Length: 542
Image (cartoon, rainbow, N blue to C red):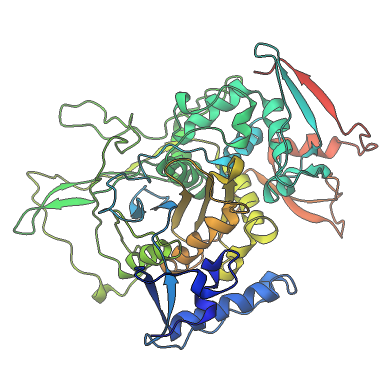
């Protein structure tokens, strides 16, 4: 068997000859390469080459790969030192569609998707931006990207947050700041709305108070959360502002195929919430805090008490979560395997359910239900977590991350309904990408179990986003796009480069969105001279 130089080049690491890489008696691992694999890589390379030369919306979808599964070569491979996790949920009800807990369940039983507490880095910023939208900011609001210094007098230390590139871009719109992941804008934004308010508000996404730091570092993603929590939080943006709880088991059947238990998840129901608001005029905001009126109560348990979701629908101490779904989906199962393979990670546990439209004849009949055990089907609205308009504004900004920001690699999917956010922690200890598209919300994490660095340049866009792309490419194959539509109370406006709303009928501006009640205030803002003071100091914030 002969291995070409290109198939071992990644392992040379400065060595000039292949014989310096191996010694007699070494046991090596080889990865088979098929013609289909080679064709797919060529397609990706070609798209990456032209991505910066042609507008993304003008690119025609690439032709499908025509290569066969015949092995044409072998590539040197190894067991990875890094670990990864993937969680994929349906945002409408929290159904788990895929879960990867690590490289090998035989190697370690630790499920990183539900048990590993890691810092999400910049992938946490959408929650900060959502809190700011509730405080009157808009995607067109201008915030300064410039140096700022915070003194912690209690510890005698000074904190100087930095952007990852060490540069400062000056005044910029929030939409642009999120797309480019500007750290100093996020810090200033959190400082403006207040840490106490933001911590209270972000708990509506399912995060616990203990997981959220009580200082401005929260703006940079210093919370400690499992990937499951990040995926659950992003479902709020994808479903219009409802908090759904992840669930692993759809139904339990006995040996005769009779359903004896069934999940009754809360569902995102915009019309239900609207009816509830019409029936009871309850103020949802008191000084910006009481922000989560219940649109529907949880179904009663057998003893008549309300079902509890105190643990977020899953147990962080469970090492082998159960996994089941209404119907097996080969596509999503293959997607989870593909996602794992892209970083040499194979699923520790996985579930898959298609959720896509299919001819009636192709859908298997549901098992019979024993009414004495299960009772009639029950559907109830999930609890509203945030304003539907806030969810829309942040979701639209995350689409800009894909179009013009750190997530442009996902343009290879050729879908207009995807959005998300990259995340990287200090010294590349963690790499993240969380995002949505079609009927799925998916979070990917990559890192070391011992918290050591992944290596220079291993940002979320490089280490985690390719896994997300591989998974979503398969999981969303044939799934119609789910367009993001402005809800009632959102006004479409034209703005200039300074974020100011242009008069009706103006041309040459950029399209953006504001809440209806904020429109007059933004229209009254008069452009003024740029602030020449690009550095400022703040005190006593920790």
